[in-house]
Length: 370
Image (cartoon, rainbow, N blue to C red; front, side):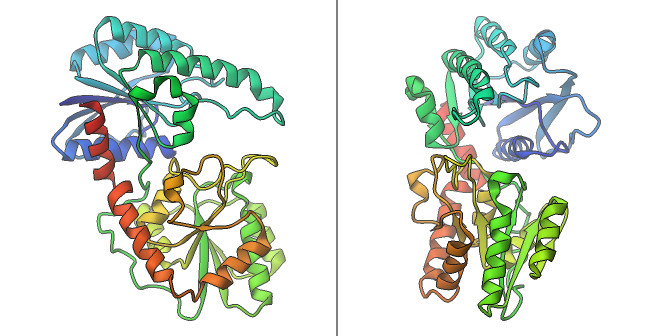
């Protein structure tokens, strides 16, 4: 099978879709699939992907780039085109209407298209009225992309429900870890003795409620618990100042290479993942997050909130917690010596091995495309 993956983002551009495209193309190629990646023409683009051919050919993703995209596709003549889609990837305004014209031309040329939706549209929320019109246009674009696609892939059931009219075309395939070292036993048995390590890895946007993490550490400290918080990645200065104000043991690592990230994840006793979409809506733990998959890959128990993005399949594999520092502290106290924690970790490992490893994800793609 000859496959062309189209993505505006690719390493060394930072971001979830960039990492996703890299690992998917690498895994495809290592499975013997002839794999090409059409991406942005930037000097930072990494062309060195095992057995895959990276084509950094597109200067600007807009209606003016359609001819160049078609030219590159016609050279390759792939059996499948897999387009990595997010509304803001191909349009600064988040309304990439031009992609509909690209799809129409591809269908005229009888190419088979699989659209991989990383996002479909902004979630409708009356508390954010300025986004309502954008959400409406994004829904129209998504409808036409679905209509013109031969196959569709989404990461969570919530996205499948948004485009349920095309259910027969849709396959739910979760996101894999965006920090996969060559040796997955790397970092084993390096925990700090007699100290509970809790932490987080990834973006520090306000919906992740990092302040709640830090306040929970303060509560635990006041209860006499020897605890340390580790933020793996780049954290805003105000979180560092908050940690200092709370007088807690906290480490902010800054940017790290994936092997070092994985080593830190392996040290953690608990990984905290909160996602609160707005004051009214809980997004919750979800399988569209490479951060969540990274925690699973490191076999660390996750304490997280449940929300509209949370698939039922996750229910047995994390510790449910409200976005509240007191409840978070209570959960850590309850589970730190919990006799069934080893059993939970065994379930986490099994779930990762069977569902979130990149070879499993790639095989799910292949079965769906066939």
